[in-house]
Image (tube, rainbow, N blue to C red; front, top):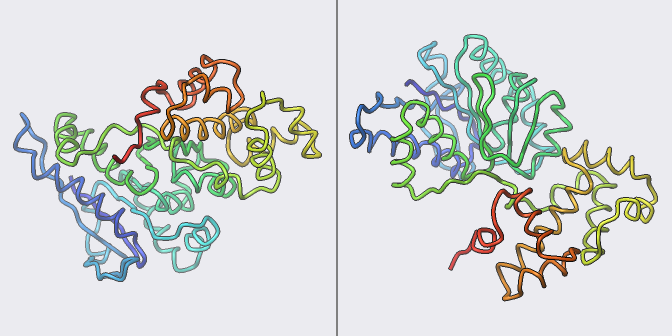
Length: 324
């Protein structure tokens, strides 16, 4: 498969490298699987030639026009812009119009499109994600949702497939993206490459999300997040939260749905779950004791929350994301 990786000045070094290494590892070990697919031919391209990465390195690239229509997949890795507002300024700026035009043309020509992390904003700005399911980096979800309301966003997902378009989440998801594309041609090769790279099966970004970060774009949602933390050991009541915040339950529901894509109760559950996960990983408290500290009368309720919002057991949550 001919793959064009489109980069510009400020491309994120780690994301680009993770993407390339995912394909390179698949090429390196392809002979170890039966009936291997053809190797991936990776071309790094830009609008004009060599670019400077976010860390100041020169990255060799060939002008996209030199490839004509020789590629069947166009991938947009991340640019090193962490904030939603400067990112939207970048993708909507006049200097980005040639990039957006090339994305639209590729989509019209039925070229597969893929992007990860902040790179997903280029696809959304070009309009190729309208009506499609998509993901992006977890902290960019609220701003993405406001800017592109016609996209069916689920920022909890690591990977999301639409019609000829696939999107991925934060930095390390570049490698998940590469291996998912390898998987389309050879599941066995994708599994083998993943083992060489020691990358596990990460299905969700939800456990990495920081509630106070995703809430900061809306004043009411921010106030609600702080209210939940102040009442963490108490059973959650939507009417009490709305009353203390000087609003109505309906207004609070509208605010969290528009900003975060979830209900106030689910967001409160995520805040409680973040605290519970911290206690489970860093203390010897029993599950019952942790449940009481985050507003649940029994361990069963906490176990159900973990299963519903994270898709794992308490034991799996307790052992996840440990470094020692």
